[in-house]
Amino acid sequence: GDSVTQMEGPVTLSEEAFLTINCTYTATGYPSLFWYVQYPGEGLQLLLKATKADDKGSNKGFEATYRKETTSFHLEKGSVQVSDSAVYFCALSDQTLGNYGQNFVFGPGTRLSVLP
Amino acid sequence: DAGVIQSPRHEVTEMGQEVTLRCKPISGHNSLFWYRQTMMRGLELLIYFNNNVPIDDSGMPEDRFSAKMPNASFSTLKIQPSEPRDSAVYFCASSRDWADYEQYFGPGTRLTVT
Image (tube, rainbow over all chains, first blue to last red; front, side, top):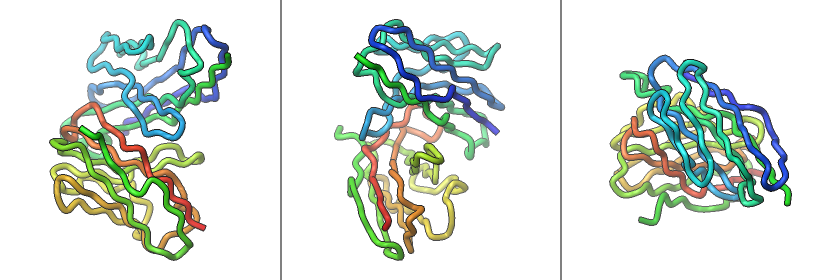
């Protein structure tokens, strides 16, 4: 079945450092890919998305490119801030017909801590 | 729109008691999802509905858990009887359609079973 793998955390960076959080996936169809962010005490929020190969999703300085050849969707940000401290989830939505049970799959999450 | 609304935000109960969690999805959204989040297991999809009909409940851990969606604007997740291992944060999310790529999450209900 479909699955998402993320780099294990926690990731601790200093403010203004470069961020990469790796994400790879397996899917039977042609999934859409997402990054969600969860701030302390809150629910998940969509950060960015890409719906087809080579698409780049971007939001709030974060970027991720849908790489079909490497089945990856790595999250990057050039200069992190303390306010970016959160848990980041990579996810996929596989819209293959009849695949109801695997429609939306989340990775385990990567906790990011940014120090001032 | 107020977003996905969950109640209560916090629930503390004793083992053996019945617990009911409530969710109001975003108006116009046809799909609703229940998740459980724990440190050990991460985010788990328990069940989801499309047009008020349960589509996949394979994630429901056991018969003590049940979920209903009597209408498009309300869903419940019930645990009876509750056990300490059910302690977790339970999230409800909704989307326009089961195949829609964007889910909107509620703030969650933190359940503690003593």
